[in-house]
Image (cartoon, rainbow, N blue to C red; front, side):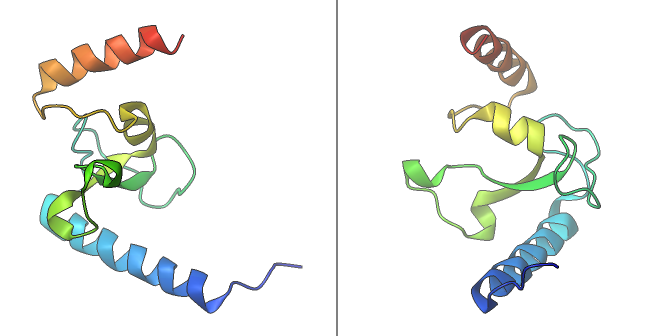
Length: 103
């Protein structure tokens, strides 16, 4: 038997869906970190679309749409809240460094 979701969980889900729709309308279906199309049907796979805080909350970023972008679950997790430039070459270099650190 499925567990009933609380009204707070339901409201969070509705907010997430609205934000995702707004971000998708603004930015399209490509991950802003790698430029590959995201999967909007799958919520748990590495290619699933997630909402990323460009300036992480721990660094003072907010939940406003200007600070939010869509990214693959893999890319968002791999970024690990490291401040970066949005330049592709710098991101690839940073990504390689992170993979070496977390081997």
